[in-house]
Image (cartoon, rainbow, N blue to C red; front, top):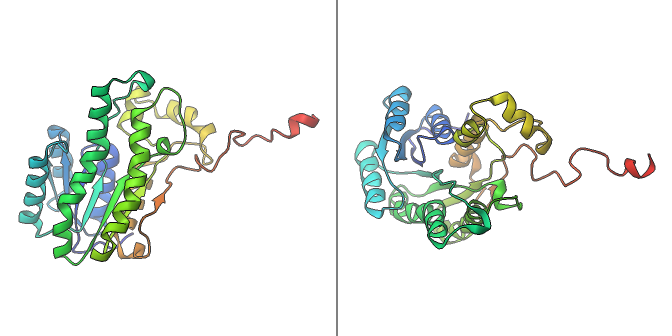
Length: 262
């Protein structure tokens, strides 16, 4: 378990399954955590379940004033900010047919919201002598996928943004990395499958070397590690928590060459 004693973290999208699982890993490592989200009922329930070291703050990441208010509330309650985890995103995506308004909405949430949150939290990290930012990329930012455009492009941009943030914040002792999950048991997978985990695993199996969906706590553990001193040598990198999705080529796990001689 990552040692995050005396650390304070903000998790945007903290009311989602991946968000609160990451928050749980941070809390278990000793951190105080603020869940920043717009899903008030779920966010408040999760925070209450996690105990006094976790609070919920209504935060629309497309609104600068709400980001400011979240950071201020974090400092007031816990004394500062050491870590920012940018989970919040939208799955708005009509592929090649996406309109200008849809493009701007998706990029505002998935990319610009994360960029501005980081920009605004950096002064607080400087006060603490440094910090860690973990952005959320995706396998969708690395591989072309049918029917998708906005989500994929925004996630590719996040991976690029991570490298540039790492470069520009290195002098402040602020490390910036990203995680790129594969198909993960999450809100969207739960909803698409009708909350049928077995069905989701079956569809995901041939696409991942591990033969199943990635668990949200596997992603959360990686986030906690990147926020800890154990990852002090890591910055500007992307961690593929994808069960081997991006390692696998189009031949998947089948010996296609044998078909030529068979």
